[in-house]
Length: 487
Ligand code: NDP
Image (cartoon, rainbow, N blue to C red):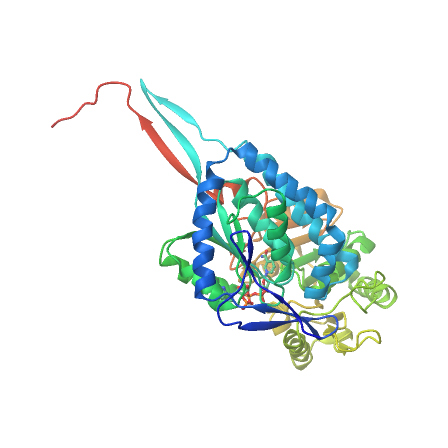
């Protein structure tokens, strides 16, 4: 049987490339090739630019309320097609249906809904200068590029498209080669909602296609989600035409558990922060600092819950709560990190190996893994693993744990568990991270701005702050009196 072939979505329709060049997409849960995708060639990319220019002329001329209505129709369609879209995400990413069916589509729709609601409220200001005055206009930037990672493909496309389009921009989006379908479905939904062709285009391919966008002089902004090193390359390329950039990059975030914390809650947070989406989440709290006095009871509870509650298997099975890693290659990288942990003297408490569940023996699974007796210098405590590997570290002093939590080039997220409210806020105020949780972990509502400190990023996604990253400010001075001039 011939495989289905996906294409780029340009100017409101699927567009074939010239030479039929394709790449395979593998279902990480089974290890099987599920479809192919045509790589966008020069002609497809040029057409995406042309249609984006035409789309911008139409979209930016519409009133914000008109744009908002279309975006809200798309929100309704996303929710209506939740299950179909979630199944696509499960097949592309290997994450459990249990998650995708309640999180991925929903959080994407939430962000579009949030920004659609703000569209008509975007305004400038006015100030009197004697009889003269000036006012400001918040104008769209133009054609924005979105470049996505593979862990939340549809959600990332929504989080980038939502503020961009609400502000009157258009977007050319390049999904990860590993997860190309979610963004295509979003493009179809936007069309069905009444969006003009060319406002949201999807181009398929690898780093070269990404580079074509980031180097193009007519792209006004790049919003990128991915690894730090790739982000640095993207920024260098974007510098050639001084593009605005938003960077959502990696992390090695601390989760700090004080001796007065609710232990069950703290264990829940540590598990969510390491095993949700089988550990493939940028904000993961992979350095779990536990106060010396509660370390043993914490570990006992943690191991008991991992043993009793984690269900690894076919990601589409509703019982499964722990899925497969994105690829065989990534699975091997995670296993290499585990070997590093062993070589450098950490104690392996559970996991530490690949798994072949009976129902899906070819999937790329790695067992939920916990190391204790870790120290800050170990590779597993310094580098982002992006897999289900938790490193438990101990501490006994507040100042000490703050310093150790901050001793990282990353600064994406952090969590603190304590019942002492003054300590919670005091500690968080000193943590160098853009996304922080107190007695919680991972929640990220659309109205909350998210982004990294230090190497973890630039700019923000979601929240009001993002409107500034998708608009430019025009100041207009108006002379009311005759112009004075020495000439
Ligand atoms: P990568 O950096 O490898 O890739 C991200 C995207 O960039 C992909 O679409 C990729 O294309 C593309 N790309 C690769 N090279 C270039 C280039 N030179 N120019 C332009 N585009 C390029 O990241 P992953 O896909 O491996 O995603 C995992 C990473 O993403 C982790 O580090 C994780 O922390 C981070 N992440 C951060 C989030 C945040 O919000 N802070 C959220 C989610 C993930 P292709 O892969 O198709 O070749």
